[in-house]
Image 1 (tube, rainbow, N blue to C red):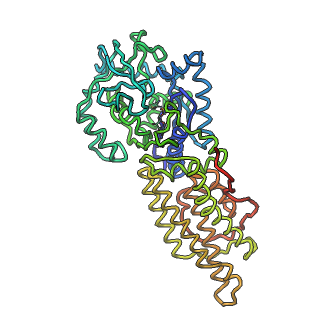
Image 2: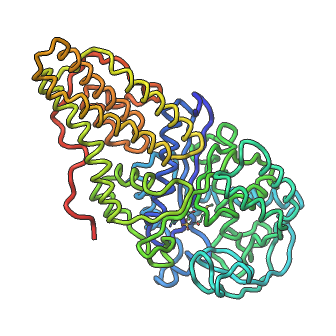
Image 3: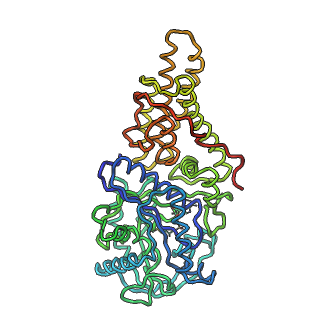
Length: 513
Ligand code: MSP
């Protein structure tokens, strides 16, 4: 469990501004926000960073095609990514843009340090370049001569470049991959980078001669720092200027979690740690590599492929909480999977409106009907208290490994158990019964249900940050009482329910087209 006062720095990749944000970008930011919110409510010293990657050939080309300067192109799209974070209820503490002058100056200092370490040299590069990836490829990496990520044909490039002696860091990297806690999760991704490094590392070019939209190399302005080098450094540069007049590095570095998709695993698990070692930094504590969401055509969703889904119709139709829930529930976090409007529509109704929403509204309605709205002050049913304790415990363990899907599955065991409990106890029968034990049994039933709803709200709050407070308010609790230590099914305190709210998840007629 994240500990009170523990430094807890969480990052997402910074997204390219070659096009509008889509559901794939929303995915990582949502996951990072769930980790962030949980750590924050456990009292950790959390800092959550996201932002945009604005230099390089890809953005330069997008701007040229639109007939504007790269900066003119980047400004409104960066604003759209900022809006994305807001629209999905992300609570990032800063939004970095690689065109921030403070970042650019920091990048220059960072590569100076690598140079002082003796890790840079000049040489000629020739090879295949995929602009969509902003990466060099070997023939063997291609599938039918095409980029494995984007299906586009890479272009032959030959240039005089500055190189980073990455090969010198192979042993240090292997040492870190062997250490505990694992540098990379899930384990399969760690194995993947380990065998890549064991296969031998080549030095990498860290400048581009033909690209002028980038940070100039401090000692040779004819070269721009390669966009990936510039971009990776954001995780450290941001800490130096996110809070004016304060350098957060000593407090927050090394990062607790760096989240990213498997498409950019090698940049983060090989090049980035080697750069940090070269410049004299500690390595991040753990990287979490999630899978790729596929669009309706079954391929990885991307702007380049043209199959990207806009997150906005989903967020508008079902609400941001439902989108957060759907993405983390539908695809096991860490694996690949498909998402779509029809699946969203189904899960919204089956899981959220029916299983969760109805449980809440029935519980409130019954307290209103049978006890004039006052929740009985009796202990809840012991079997439910035991199940809730087990679920909270498992949830905590899942969160240790960012298994957000596993945690949700356990929470749903409690949702389903509560629904079965209502049916088994049949409060409507107890209310009519003349049996001497009936009133006490009804009290216990109602107290168990409202306590169940309260614990569910606490557990679900990182996923459903707007709906969970409504659940709490509906049972007369303070809407912000979401500390993790409150996830215990305990005694009712004689509160009154508030039946004035509408359904938590109102029905939606049809999915967005
Ligand atoms: N700018 C680089 C990252 C630099 S980080 C120092 C980049 N940008 S990107 O816009 O292409 O974003 C890639 C990241 O966005 C992925 O690693 C992932 O976090 C997220 N996703 C983009 N498309 C996605 C899917 N289709 N599915 C899941 N995540 C996706 O690469």
